[in-house]
Image 1 (spheres, one colour):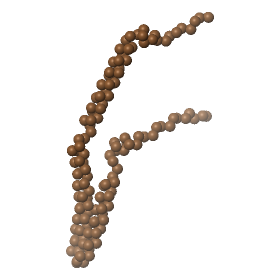
Image 2 (cartoon, rainbow, N blue to C red):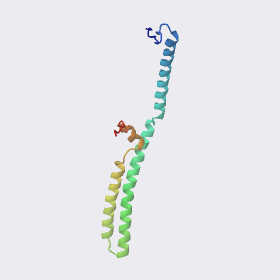
Image 3 (cartoon, rainbow, N blue to C red):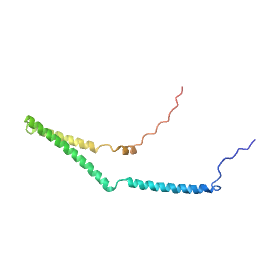
Length: 135
């Protein structure tokens, strides 16, 4: 009978280059983490840009409301002019435009976030392992 051969690697103490390699890897991972955090800070918009995004959304909501009301008023005025129904068409369509403006405003305010934010918030589920079909 022969003795089984021991193919294990020697200990760290007998291989000093592994200690040096480990130190270099730790240093490299620290530098990578520092670079990632620096890039994350640079990629984030500044506080002044975040405020501007809020203003832009507010102006968009206000313009949708005003546009709906104006369009309703103009349609009502046109119907009154065509059919001579004095204020009734304008009142009716002005109220209808007011309601449409509020509805558009509510839809825009509740709009889903951009796709990237949705994907980050809800990662896709893990795939189920494939079962081997038995014959």
